[in-house]
Image (cartoon, rainbow, N blue to C red; front, side, top):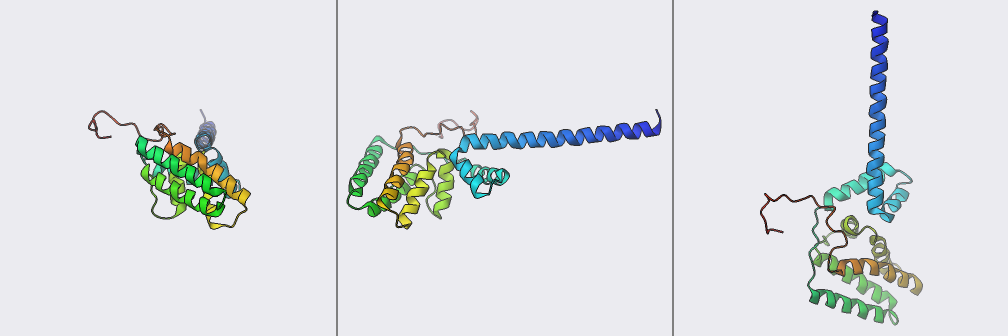
Length: 198
């Protein structure tokens, strides 16, 4: 073989390797993005919109949430606690008729206590709590976001009613006997890691 043929063959091989690497990286990113989209649902779409259509930025943000809050373990509630929370929520709903703004504020505070009892971080900014909850209850956090915004705004009674209705989904998920997310976000434990220390 002549030297020119060897150089051309090497260039073609290098080009094929580069093109293959780019394709694999693109497909890998799409697969990761698709997994995040499926897992986070409406929260993923909200972030893509917030990042002006930049899916990579949304993927990075959600990936960071998974790193920070994926290891949060939801603590179970006793049946007495579940009943107490349900009664408190029912009372708030009754008070909504006469005092919608106060009921919204009470519901926001109740959800914060409930999230804390379930093991979610509640100290610090609201957005941090929301990020942790989104990792485990992505389909329900937008209602909570709306409720929290209603506390700090002067919305109409109808807007407050919608905020309460939206937040109810997260409330129901947190009060449920079993966590809504059955541990798929948690790393698998090995038998060697001491049994009975859950």
